[in-house]
Image (cartoon, rainbow, N blue to C red):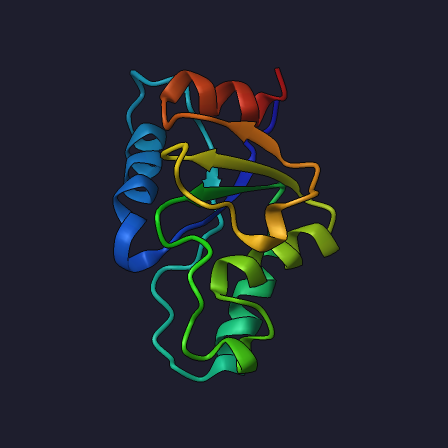
Length: 141
């Protein structure tokens, strides 16, 4: 079976440690988690069209999009008008839906609000950030 190509959607300021954990699982042969990470490294631009272009390309290259639903996942971004969505995670989810990607929503806490674009979406729901739960979701079990 080919390695899934995974794009991780997360709030960089608050939830990047979860993304780093996924990368550690992938790098550690003791863990049964493999993926080709298609998330961009930090985009060194504040230019919104540039950021949109990079994100869109990376999502297009992915087979799966894992959305880390943290405390700020649906927070209104200061540039929401230019982004066209409440924030970057909502943009990424909308792009994943448009491109018909397999979306996996990992809710870190039951009190956290799902990003608007995840509502009424066919995303696979994962209710805890655990290795087993995420592997099962990626594999479609």
